[in-house]
Image 1 (tube, rainbow, N blue to C red):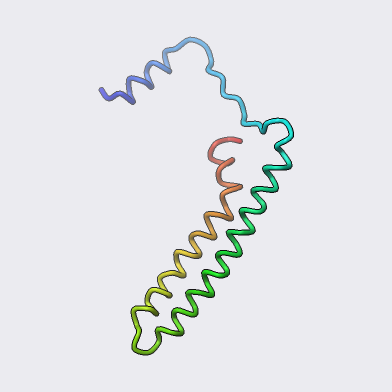
Image 2 (image 1 turned 120 degrees about the vertical axis):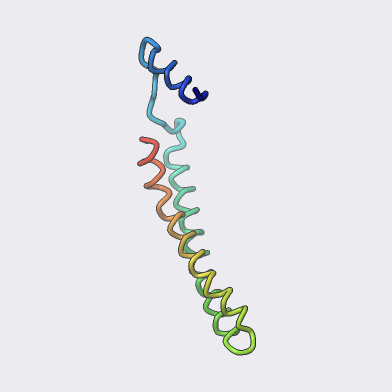
Length: 100
């Protein structure tokens, strides 16, 4: 039997409920932290825009005799879009998974 199964059995057999409070911000941090998250999202979106522009420039410059540069630019588009997606969805995904 693995350690995970043993721990699960111990928790299942334990008498009483374990506390599971909702996360709460320290007093006075609600507005400050919201501002920080907004700034971080803005920086992420602007970085994504600049990243897509950089990928486009790499593809244009690598068109002739520098096909490796063009391929790097094309593959970079996927990573930029993935990064923008993660940054944009973080505020909604984390509370959804952790019950905040």
